[in-house]
Image (cartoon, rainbow, N blue to C red; front, side, top):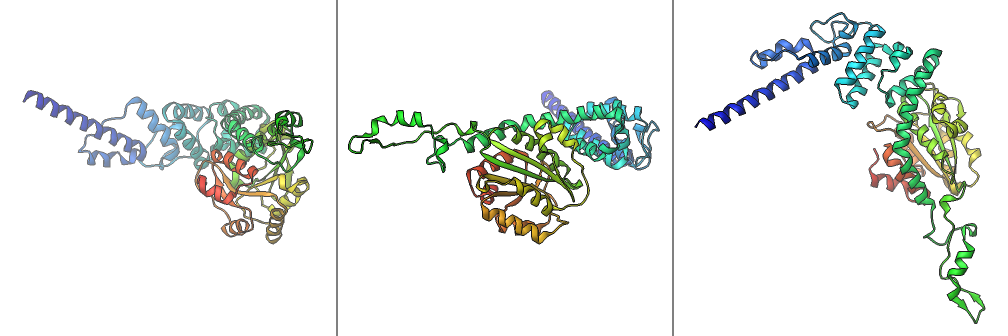
Length: 414
Protein backbone atom coordinates (compact mmCIF):
# COMPACT_ATOMS: atom_id res chain seq x y z
CA UNK A 1 0.00 0.00 0.00
CA UNK A 2 2.83 2.34 0.84
CA UNK A 3 4.43 1.69 -2.56
CA UNK A 4 1.13 2.30 -4.29
CA UNK A 5 0.60 5.57 -2.45
CA UNK A 6 4.12 6.64 -3.36
CA UNK A 7 3.50 5.89 -7.05
CA UNK A 8 0.25 7.86 -6.97
CA UNK A 9 2.04 10.77 -5.32
CA UNK A 10 4.75 10.68 -7.99
CA UNK A 11 2.15 10.56 -10.77
CA UNK A 12 0.26 13.43 -9.20
CA UNK A 13 3.50 15.38 -8.88
CA UNK A 14 4.33 14.78 -12.56
CA UNK A 15 0.83 15.86 -13.57
CA UNK A 16 1.18 19.10 -11.60
CA UNK A 17 4.60 19.74 -13.15
CA UNK A 18 3.19 19.19 -16.63
CA UNK A 19 0.28 21.55 -15.90
CA UNK A 20 2.71 24.18 -14.60
CA UNK A 21 4.93 23.83 -17.69
CA UNK A 22 1.92 24.21 -19.98
CA UNK A 23 0.68 27.25 -18.04
CA UNK A 24 4.12 28.89 -18.28
CA UNK A 25 4.23 28.27 -22.04
CA UNK A 26 0.86 29.97 -22.43
CA UNK A 27 2.04 32.79 -20.18
CA UNK A 28 5.04 33.39 -22.48
CA UNK A 29 2.84 33.26 -25.58
CA UNK A 30 0.04 35.51 -24.29
CA UNK A 31 2.05 37.95 -22.20
CA UNK A 32 1.48 39.56 -18.83
CA UNK A 33 -2.10 40.53 -19.70
CA UNK A 34 -3.07 36.86 -19.51
CA UNK A 35 -1.40 36.20 -16.16
CA UNK A 36 -4.46 36.68 -13.91
CA UNK A 37 -6.69 34.64 -16.18
CA UNK A 38 -4.14 31.81 -16.27
CA UNK A 39 -3.99 31.89 -12.48
CA UNK A 40 -7.74 31.48 -12.36
CA UNK A 41 -7.65 28.54 -14.78
CA UNK A 42 -4.85 26.91 -12.80
CA UNK A 43 -6.59 27.49 -9.48
CA UNK A 44 -4.31 30.36 -8.54
CA UNK A 45 -1.21 28.25 -8.81
CA UNK A 46 0.96 29.48 -11.72
CA UNK A 47 4.48 29.85 -10.39
CA UNK A 48 6.63 32.90 -10.98
CA UNK A 49 8.84 32.97 -14.07
CA UNK A 50 12.40 31.80 -13.67
CA UNK A 51 15.22 34.18 -14.55
CA UNK A 52 15.62 32.60 -18.01
CA UNK A 53 11.86 32.66 -18.60
CA UNK A 54 11.72 36.30 -17.52
CA UNK A 55 14.40 37.23 -20.10
CA UNK A 56 12.53 35.23 -22.71
CA UNK A 57 9.29 37.00 -21.75
CA UNK A 58 10.93 40.41 -22.09
CA UNK A 59 12.38 39.48 -25.50
CA UNK A 60 8.90 38.51 -26.75
CA UNK A 61 7.31 41.56 -25.13
CA UNK A 62 9.63 43.86 -27.07
CA UNK A 63 7.92 42.76 -30.26
CA UNK A 64 4.45 41.60 -29.33
CA UNK A 65 3.25 43.56 -26.27
CA UNK A 66 0.51 46.11 -26.95
CA UNK A 67 0.66 48.57 -24.09
CA UNK A 68 4.33 49.30 -23.45
CA UNK A 69 7.51 49.74 -25.37
CA UNK A 70 8.68 46.39 -24.03
CA UNK A 71 11.80 45.24 -22.34
CA UNK A 72 14.10 46.02 -25.25
CA UNK A 73 13.47 49.72 -24.64
CA UNK A 74 14.36 49.39 -20.99
CA UNK A 75 11.02 50.92 -19.95
CA UNK A 76 9.48 47.94 -18.16
CA UNK A 77 6.15 46.25 -18.92
CA UNK A 78 2.50 46.42 -18.05
CA UNK A 79 -0.46 44.30 -19.05
CA UNK A 80 -1.23 43.78 -22.71
CA UNK A 81 0.68 43.28 -25.93
CA UNK A 82 2.05 46.38 -27.65
CA UNK A 83 5.39 47.97 -28.49
CA UNK A 84 6.61 51.52 -28.63
CA UNK A 85 8.45 53.50 -31.23
CA UNK A 86 11.65 51.51 -30.93
CA UNK A 87 14.63 50.86 -28.69
CA UNK A 88 18.10 52.28 -28.70
CA UNK A 89 20.81 50.35 -30.52
CA UNK A 90 22.45 49.03 -27.31
CA UNK A 91 19.11 47.74 -26.02
CA UNK A 92 18.27 46.10 -29.33
CA UNK A 93 21.72 44.53 -29.46
CA UNK A 94 21.08 42.94 -26.05
CA UNK A 95 17.61 41.89 -27.20
CA UNK A 96 19.04 40.16 -30.29
CA UNK A 97 21.54 38.34 -28.09
CA UNK A 98 18.77 37.19 -25.75
CA UNK A 99 16.63 35.95 -28.63
CA UNK A 100 19.47 33.98 -30.19
CA UNK A 101 20.43 32.36 -26.89
CA UNK A 102 16.92 31.38 -25.80
CA UNK A 103 15.03 30.28 -28.91
CA UNK A 104 15.58 27.67 -31.66
CA UNK A 105 17.05 28.94 -34.95
CA UNK A 106 13.81 28.77 -36.93
CA UNK A 107 11.98 30.73 -34.20
CA UNK A 108 14.80 33.33 -34.09
CA UNK A 109 14.30 34.00 -37.80
CA UNK A 110 10.58 34.62 -37.32
CA UNK A 111 11.07 36.91 -34.31
CA UNK A 112 13.80 38.93 -36.07
CA UNK A 113 11.64 39.40 -39.13
CA UNK A 114 8.68 40.46 -37.00
CA UNK A 115 10.94 42.98 -35.27
CA UNK A 116 11.88 44.48 -38.62
CA UNK A 117 8.31 44.58 -39.93
CA UNK A 118 6.22 45.33 -36.82
CA UNK A 119 8.52 47.73 -34.99
CA UNK A 120 10.23 49.57 -37.81
CA UNK A 121 13.68 48.67 -36.52
CA UNK A 122 15.22 48.41 -39.99
CA UNK A 123 17.13 51.66 -39.56
CA UNK A 124 19.03 50.08 -36.67
CA UNK A 125 20.46 47.50 -39.07
CA UNK A 126 22.61 50.29 -40.45
CA UNK A 127 24.88 50.12 -37.40
CA UNK A 128 27.68 47.57 -38.06
CA UNK A 129 27.93 46.58 -34.38
CA UNK A 130 24.22 45.78 -34.32
CA UNK A 131 24.12 44.07 -37.70
CA UNK A 132 26.90 41.74 -36.53
CA UNK A 133 24.55 40.39 -33.81
CA UNK A 134 21.77 39.45 -36.26
CA UNK A 135 21.27 35.79 -37.13
CA UNK A 136 21.86 35.66 -40.89
CA UNK A 137 19.03 34.03 -42.83
CA UNK A 138 17.36 34.41 -46.19
CA UNK A 139 14.66 36.78 -44.87
CA UNK A 140 17.29 39.09 -43.42
CA UNK A 141 19.19 39.06 -46.73
CA UNK A 142 15.95 40.08 -48.46
CA UNK A 143 15.56 42.97 -46.00
CA UNK A 144 19.14 44.12 -46.59
CA UNK A 145 18.70 43.98 -50.37
CA UNK A 146 15.56 46.10 -50.12
CA UNK A 147 17.44 48.66 -48.02
CA UNK A 148 20.83 48.46 -49.73
CA UNK A 149 20.57 51.90 -51.30
CA UNK A 150 20.30 53.41 -47.80
CA UNK A 151 23.06 51.41 -46.11
CA UNK A 152 25.88 53.77 -45.06
CA UNK A 153 29.46 53.08 -46.09
CA UNK A 154 30.50 52.06 -42.56
CA UNK A 155 27.97 49.22 -42.59
CA UNK A 156 28.35 47.90 -46.14
CA UNK A 157 31.18 45.48 -45.37
CA UNK A 158 29.29 44.01 -42.39
CA UNK A 159 26.19 43.63 -44.56
CA UNK A 160 28.24 41.94 -47.26
CA UNK A 161 29.71 39.48 -44.73
CA UNK A 162 26.21 38.60 -43.54
CA UNK A 163 24.92 38.10 -47.10
CA UNK A 164 27.98 36.00 -47.99
CA UNK A 165 27.39 33.73 -45.00
CA UNK A 166 23.86 33.02 -46.18
CA UNK A 167 24.89 32.59 -49.84
CA UNK A 168 27.68 30.19 -48.90
CA UNK A 169 25.21 28.11 -46.91
CA UNK A 170 22.72 28.01 -49.81
CA UNK A 171 25.46 27.07 -52.30
CA UNK A 172 26.65 24.32 -49.96
CA UNK A 173 23.08 23.04 -49.71
CA UNK A 174 22.43 23.00 -53.48
CA UNK A 175 25.67 22.72 -55.46
CA UNK A 176 26.26 18.98 -55.25
CA UNK A 177 22.67 18.11 -56.22
CA UNK A 178 22.61 20.58 -59.14
CA UNK A 179 25.93 19.31 -60.49
CA UNK A 180 24.80 15.71 -60.14
CA UNK A 181 21.55 16.48 -61.96
CA UNK A 182 23.30 18.19 -64.88
CA UNK A 183 25.97 15.49 -65.13
CA UNK A 184 23.34 12.76 -65.00
CA UNK A 185 21.37 14.35 -67.81
CA UNK A 186 24.32 15.13 -70.10
CA UNK A 187 26.47 12.07 -69.51
CA UNK A 188 25.05 9.77 -72.19
CA UNK A 189 27.84 7.27 -72.49
CA UNK A 190 25.34 4.48 -71.87
CA UNK A 191 22.71 5.75 -74.32
CA UNK A 192 22.85 5.52 -78.14
CA UNK A 193 22.60 6.90 -80.65
CA UNK A 194 23.50 10.55 -80.12
CA UNK A 195 22.05 13.08 -82.54
CA UNK A 196 25.58 14.16 -83.50
CA UNK A 197 28.73 12.25 -84.45
CA UNK A 198 30.87 14.80 -82.63
CA UNK A 199 30.68 12.93 -79.32
CA UNK A 200 31.88 9.54 -80.63
CA UNK A 201 35.15 8.20 -79.23
CA UNK A 202 36.35 6.66 -82.51
CA UNK A 203 39.50 5.03 -81.15
CA UNK A 204 37.63 3.20 -78.43
CA UNK A 205 34.69 2.32 -80.71
CA UNK A 206 37.01 0.73 -83.31
CA UNK A 207 39.13 -1.20 -80.80
CA UNK A 208 36.08 -2.58 -78.99
CA UNK A 209 34.39 -3.66 -82.25
CA UNK A 210 37.32 -5.33 -84.08
CA UNK A 211 35.74 -8.71 -83.35
CA UNK A 212 32.77 -7.62 -85.46
CA UNK A 213 34.85 -7.22 -88.62
CA UNK A 214 32.87 -8.50 -91.65
CA UNK A 215 35.29 -10.20 -94.05
CA UNK A 216 32.76 -10.17 -96.87
CA UNK A 217 32.08 -6.46 -96.65
CA UNK A 218 35.66 -5.77 -95.52
CA UNK A 219 34.52 -3.39 -92.83
CA UNK A 220 33.73 -3.27 -89.15
CA UNK A 221 30.05 -3.50 -88.25
CA UNK A 222 29.96 -1.81 -84.82
CA UNK A 223 27.72 -3.48 -82.31
CA UNK A 224 28.07 -0.53 -80.00
CA UNK A 225 29.35 3.04 -80.21
CA UNK A 226 31.34 4.64 -77.40
CA UNK A 227 31.25 8.33 -76.56
CA UNK A 228 33.37 10.78 -74.66
CA UNK A 229 32.09 11.77 -71.24
CA UNK A 230 29.71 14.50 -72.34
CA UNK A 231 29.61 15.99 -68.88
CA UNK A 232 33.17 17.24 -69.43
CA UNK A 233 32.50 18.90 -72.75
CA UNK A 234 31.92 22.63 -72.75
CA UNK A 235 28.71 24.52 -73.37
CA UNK A 236 26.45 21.68 -74.48
CA UNK A 237 23.31 23.44 -73.26
CA UNK A 238 22.32 27.06 -72.79
CA UNK A 239 20.50 27.74 -69.53
CA UNK A 240 18.80 31.12 -69.16
CA UNK A 241 17.47 32.15 -65.74
CA UNK A 242 15.14 35.15 -66.08
CA UNK A 243 14.31 36.53 -62.62
CA UNK A 244 11.48 38.86 -61.59
CA UNK A 245 12.97 41.26 -59.03
CA UNK A 246 9.70 42.75 -57.80
CA UNK A 247 9.55 43.11 -54.01
CA UNK A 248 7.18 40.18 -53.50
CA UNK A 249 9.74 37.81 -55.02
CA UNK A 250 12.57 38.46 -52.51
CA UNK A 251 13.14 34.85 -51.37
CA UNK A 252 12.85 33.55 -54.93
CA UNK A 253 15.32 36.16 -56.21
CA UNK A 254 17.92 35.05 -53.66
CA UNK A 255 17.49 31.35 -54.38
CA UNK A 256 17.40 31.86 -58.16
CA UNK A 257 20.56 33.98 -58.03
CA UNK A 258 22.42 31.34 -56.05
CA UNK A 259 21.28 28.55 -58.37
CA UNK A 260 22.19 30.69 -61.39
CA UNK A 261 25.71 31.06 -60.00
CA UNK A 262 25.96 27.27 -59.63
CA UNK A 263 24.84 26.80 -63.25
CA UNK A 264 27.48 29.33 -64.31
CA UNK A 265 30.20 27.26 -62.63
CA UNK A 266 29.39 24.12 -64.67
CA UNK A 267 31.49 23.94 -67.89
CA UNK A 268 28.82 22.00 -69.80
CA UNK A 269 26.39 24.92 -69.52
CA UNK A 270 26.35 28.32 -71.16
CA UNK A 271 24.52 30.26 -68.47
CA UNK A 272 22.79 33.63 -68.66
CA UNK A 273 21.25 35.26 -65.59
CA UNK A 274 18.93 38.21 -66.13
CA UNK A 275 16.81 40.20 -63.67
CA UNK A 276 13.95 42.48 -64.58
CA UNK A 277 11.27 44.84 -63.36
CA UNK A 278 10.23 47.35 -66.03
CA UNK A 279 13.88 47.35 -67.13
CA UNK A 280 16.19 44.44 -67.85
CA UNK A 281 19.61 43.98 -66.23
CA UNK A 282 22.04 41.27 -67.35
CA UNK A 283 23.94 39.99 -64.30
CA UNK A 284 25.69 37.10 -66.05
CA UNK A 285 29.21 38.38 -65.47
CA UNK A 286 28.80 39.13 -61.77
CA UNK A 287 26.91 35.85 -61.33
CA UNK A 288 29.84 33.87 -62.71
CA UNK A 289 32.36 35.78 -60.60
CA UNK A 290 30.61 36.26 -57.27
CA UNK A 291 26.95 35.56 -56.39
CA UNK A 292 27.17 38.06 -53.53
CA UNK A 293 28.07 40.83 -55.99
CA UNK A 294 25.21 39.63 -58.14
CA UNK A 295 22.72 39.92 -55.29
CA UNK A 296 23.87 43.44 -54.57
CA UNK A 297 23.16 44.16 -58.23
CA UNK A 298 19.50 43.20 -57.70
CA UNK A 299 17.06 46.07 -57.07
CA UNK A 300 14.01 44.62 -55.30
CA UNK A 301 10.77 46.46 -56.01
CA UNK A 302 9.30 48.27 -58.98
CA UNK A 303 6.97 47.18 -61.76
CA UNK A 304 7.07 44.13 -64.01
CA UNK A 305 7.61 43.74 -67.76
CA UNK A 306 8.12 40.03 -68.39
CA UNK A 307 7.63 40.35 -72.13
CA UNK A 308 10.51 42.83 -72.34
CA UNK A 309 12.83 40.48 -70.46
CA UNK A 310 11.90 37.49 -72.65
CA UNK A 311 12.56 39.60 -75.76
CA UNK A 312 16.01 40.44 -74.37
CA UNK A 313 16.79 36.79 -73.57
CA UNK A 314 15.85 35.58 -77.06
CA UNK A 315 19.20 36.81 -78.44
CA UNK A 316 21.02 34.12 -76.42
CA UNK A 317 19.02 31.23 -77.92
CA UNK A 318 21.23 29.97 -80.75
CA UNK A 319 20.27 26.29 -80.58
CA UNK A 320 16.66 26.07 -79.38
CA UNK A 321 16.63 22.31 -78.79
CA UNK A 322 19.63 22.69 -76.50
CA UNK A 323 18.23 25.60 -74.47
CA UNK A 324 16.51 25.58 -71.08
CA UNK A 325 14.69 28.84 -70.32
CA UNK A 326 13.53 29.33 -66.71
CA UNK A 327 11.32 32.29 -65.77
CA UNK A 328 11.11 32.94 -62.03
CA UNK A 329 8.06 35.19 -61.59
CA UNK A 330 4.60 35.46 -60.06
CA UNK A 331 3.44 36.37 -63.60
CA UNK A 332 1.73 39.63 -62.70
CA UNK A 333 2.60 41.16 -66.06
CA UNK A 334 2.61 44.93 -66.39
CA UNK A 335 3.82 44.82 -69.99
CA UNK A 336 2.32 43.36 -73.16
CA UNK A 337 0.71 40.14 -71.94
CA UNK A 338 -0.58 38.94 -75.33
CA UNK A 339 2.87 39.39 -76.86
CA UNK A 340 4.42 37.53 -73.92
CA UNK A 341 2.08 34.57 -74.50
CA UNK A 342 2.96 34.59 -78.18
CA UNK A 343 6.71 34.74 -77.51
CA UNK A 344 6.60 31.82 -75.10
CA UNK A 345 4.52 29.75 -77.51
CA UNK A 346 7.01 30.46 -80.32
CA UNK A 347 9.93 29.44 -78.10
CA UNK A 348 8.21 26.14 -77.36
CA UNK A 349 7.45 25.53 -81.01
CA UNK A 350 11.13 26.11 -81.82
CA UNK A 351 12.11 23.40 -79.34
CA UNK A 352 13.18 25.48 -76.32
CA UNK A 353 12.52 23.80 -72.97
CA UNK A 354 10.63 26.44 -70.98
CA UNK A 355 9.71 26.42 -67.32
CA UNK A 356 7.81 28.94 -65.17
CA UNK A 357 8.66 28.96 -61.46
CA UNK A 358 5.98 30.94 -59.64
CA UNK A 359 8.14 30.80 -56.53
CA UNK A 360 11.46 29.23 -55.60
CA UNK A 361 11.25 29.08 -51.84
CA UNK A 362 10.92 26.85 -48.80
CA UNK A 363 7.87 28.77 -47.59
CA UNK A 364 4.24 28.25 -48.55
CA UNK A 365 2.26 28.63 -51.73
CA UNK A 366 2.73 31.82 -53.73
CA UNK A 367 0.32 34.48 -54.93
CA UNK A 368 0.41 34.60 -58.73
CA UNK A 369 -1.62 35.35 -61.84
CA UNK A 370 -3.52 32.07 -62.15
CA UNK A 371 -5.02 32.88 -65.54
CA UNK A 372 -1.68 33.65 -67.18
CA UNK A 373 -0.10 30.60 -65.50
CA UNK A 374 -2.81 28.36 -66.95
CA UNK A 375 -2.41 29.89 -70.41
CA UNK A 376 1.36 29.43 -70.44
CA UNK A 377 1.03 25.87 -69.10
CA UNK A 378 -1.47 25.03 -71.80
CA UNK A 379 0.95 26.39 -74.43
CA UNK A 380 3.88 24.25 -73.26
CA UNK A 381 5.44 26.21 -70.36
CA UNK A 382 4.48 24.36 -67.17
CA UNK A 383 4.12 26.86 -64.29
CA UNK A 384 4.30 25.86 -60.64
CA UNK A 385 5.99 26.76 -57.36
CA UNK A 386 8.99 24.73 -56.37
CA UNK A 387 11.13 24.23 -53.28
CA UNK A 388 14.87 24.53 -53.94
CA UNK A 389 15.40 20.89 -52.98
CA UNK A 390 13.19 19.69 -55.83
CA UNK A 391 14.72 21.90 -58.52
CA UNK A 392 17.65 19.56 -59.39
CA UNK A 393 15.25 16.79 -60.41
CA UNK A 394 13.30 19.23 -62.58
CA UNK A 395 16.49 20.48 -64.24
CA UNK A 396 17.62 16.92 -64.94
CA UNK A 397 14.21 16.09 -66.36
CA UNK A 398 14.27 19.17 -68.60
CA UNK A 399 17.72 18.33 -69.99
CA UNK A 400 16.62 14.75 -70.61
CA UNK A 401 13.51 15.89 -72.49
CA UNK A 402 10.96 14.58 -69.99
CA UNK A 403 7.45 15.97 -69.70
CA UNK A 404 7.97 18.64 -67.04
CA UNK A 405 4.30 19.02 -66.16
CA UNK A 406 4.06 15.30 -65.40
CA UNK A 407 7.40 15.34 -63.58
CA UNK A 408 6.23 18.24 -61.41
CA UNK A 409 3.13 16.28 -60.40
CA UNK A 410 5.26 13.21 -59.67
CA UNK A 411 7.76 14.91 -57.37
CA UNK A 412 5.07 17.01 -55.68
CA UNK A 413 5.96 20.63 -56.28
CA UNK A 414 3.91 23.20 -54.37
